[in-house]
Image (cartoon, rainbow, N blue to C red; front, side, top):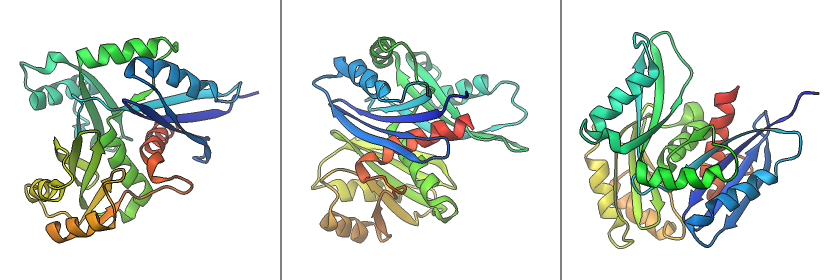
Length: 273
C-alpha cells in the first residue's frame, strides 16, 4: 500500500515554533504552536512535531527559521544557463559581494520551468548561524526539503492565497523580534528588500521611506505582525503611504499566527507534486 504524503511547514522563532501539516491535496491536517526555553532546544521541538505525523506516512517538511543574517532574493535563471546551481551561486555572489559570499550557506527553491527558464527563490545565511542550526537538526535524524526565510514565506503566502488576484506590485512588512523585514514585490518577484530596528512609534515612517524607494509605486501593503498591527496602526500606515494596508491574506482554516508555517508547507507540497 502506498504511503500517504504529509507536508509539514515550521515557522521557527527563538522561543517558539508554529507548525502546519497538509495532505496531498492541500487539506489542513493539523496546526499547533510549541514554545521552548532556548534555541538550543530547537531539535526537541522539531522532533515532537515530526512525531505527530501518522505512522506509515511519507513526510516532506520545510522550515522558515528566524536567522538574524538571513538574506533572500528572487531572480530568473535563463534556460541558457548550463547549471542552475552555478547560476544561483554567481547571482548571489554579485548580490552579497564576491569577497563575502563564502561566509554564507545558500539554499534555493526552484519554481516550475518555462520555455525561457525558471524563477529561483534563494536564501543566504551566515555559516556560523547555519552550523548551530544544522547541528540541532541532525539530532532528529534528517534535514528539511526546504529552508526558507520568513520574508519569502510571507511573499509565497500572498502569491498562493491571492493567486491571479495578487497585486502586480506590493510591499510586505514582517515583524521578526526586534526587526522589521521589508520587501517590495513586482509580478511575484522580490526586487528590493531591507530591514530596520523595530520601534512602534516610528514604524510607519520607516515603512513609508522604504516603499518610497521602490522602482514602481506599490498598489498595496501587507503586514505580518503580532499585537503591534491593530486598527489604529493600519490607519496610520494608510495615511503615511497613501495605499491600502492589510494584514496577511490567509488560506482557509489558517489563522494569522499560522500563515507562514502554512506557506512553507504549501511550498513543499508544490515542489513535490
